[in-house]
Each structure stands twice: as structure tokens, then as C-alpha cells.
Length: 212
Image (tube, rainbow, N blue to C red; front, side):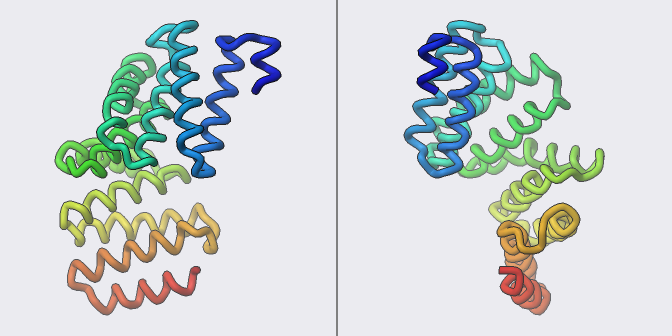
């Protein structure tokens, strides 16, 4: 990064993109404060160079929101999540991948802030969209977030149906030993248990333990 800054300058688009890539890496390694600083710097530079409605500016704003969510700073995450979602939708249209991600991000920020009724149309909408177009690997995350919302709303029978679809999808798309595969099955077991299907819940819990 420092080499690019020296040769290209702080506000060069390639430097901004490098900052964003490094911020993602740091966030994935739980170095949240450093990631947050890089996202903010990238957003500020993109705003100066490319303007408030440029895709890069909006993706930097989205990255900032996602990092705040990861840090459980939900109140602070909502504004950049909402602003980037609205602007990306206007710029790219509702079916573009960045917009789908933006809808999910705003939905999970609202869900984890306890605003379940506001989160539901966003997460349900993306789940139904994925179901209608045919499942893809990245839709595993969509289904999981919607299932978690339904559990938070005390709707375990509906959550169990979502998790059943998720397990099928994960089985098709993920290695059986992938860490998330056992988590999804454990979530399914909990939904079944809370829905009153105790034996099936126990069976799925046992199956989840075997996957670990």
C-alpha cells in the first residue's frame, strides 16, 4: 500500500481499491479498528475523487457499514448501510449483486438492532428472490440470515423450513466438513426443538455433532 501511495498518490483510484481490499482482509482477521480506519479513508478519498454517487464510493460506504455491524455497533452501521443500499439501487438497479448484498446488510443490521419488523421484508425478499431464480452458493448466507430472523421472531416452524432448505443447499454447495455446514444443521435442530419436534431436533443435533 505505501508503495502505491508513494508512486500514485493518496487519492488515486488504484490506491483506493487497495485500501478497500486490505480493509476486507483485516476485517476477516478480526482486526476491526484497523479495517474501519481504512474503510473510512477509502470512502473519503473516493468521495473527493469520484463523487458521492460513484460505485466505488458506495462500496466503501457499504464496507464501513459491514465492519461496524461486525463490531456490533448497529446504531452507527444503519445510516451507511441504508445510504449505500439506496444509492446502489438507484445506480445499478435492484437485481445487481452489489444491491442484493446491500439489502442483506441493511436487513441484518436492523435485525441485530432488534428492529425485526423492519428487517423482515428485506431478508424475506432476498430469500424469496434466491428461491425463485434458483439457488447459488452465495445464497447459503441469505437463507441463514432469514432463518435467524424467523427464530428471533419466535417462528421456529417457519425457520425449520428455511433451515431444511439451507441444509440441502449447503449439502449441494459446501464440503460436508465445512465449519458452516455443522452450524446450519445445529440451527435446524434448534428450530425443530423449539417447534415441538423434539426427537427430530435431537437427531439433527446428533448429526451436527458428527459433522464437526
